[in-house]
Each structure stands twice: as C-alpha cells, then as structure tokens.
Image (tube, rainbow, N blue to C red; front, side):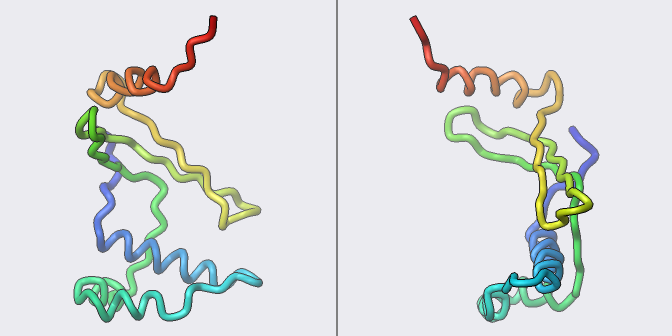
Length: 117
C-alpha cells in the first residue's frame, strides 16, 4: 500500500477551499455563488470543516473504489500541476505491483477488447 493519504470528507472540503481560493484569483473565473453556503447550511460537519480554514492541495493520495464485479480496488494517485497552468492537472492512477488491483485490471481491460479478424 502507498504511503499517500486516503481522502477523507474533511480533506475533500479542504481541497474545495484550496480550489476555490485559486479560482477566484484567475481572471474570468467565477465560483458558483452560494454553493458552499448551501452545503454548510445542510451539514454541520461541512460547516465545521469549512470554518477550520484548512486548505489542502494533495499531490499523492490513495483511493479505494468498490467495483461491482471486481470488488474493492485500491489505487495510488499522483496529481501533477504544471508551473505555467496551475489550474490544469494531470492525474495518474497506478496500482501496487502484485496487488489484487494489479491482477484484476488486465481482466477488466480485456472485457472491452475488440477482436479483429
């Protein structure tokens, strides 16, 4: 398993805070007015996390996905930002070698393979 962090709901709110702050500094970009206020009003946890003013910009995280046929899959995610376009990101998903996820990915990919004569 990767040493990267697993995304939590509080972490997601912190990433939204980071993205929101970055977006408001870009010319011509508007953040949906009232969206966070609506979320804060509907969930006490979201309101508390937002009020903590935590800002995160993850570069490495671990994501777990429950696939309907393959079951629980775990991915290491690396997020790469370019210096000249900070609002653009390349997100790379990888699986640990010899993990259950690494073994099932080729099988899943084969389900969409096109057989040519």
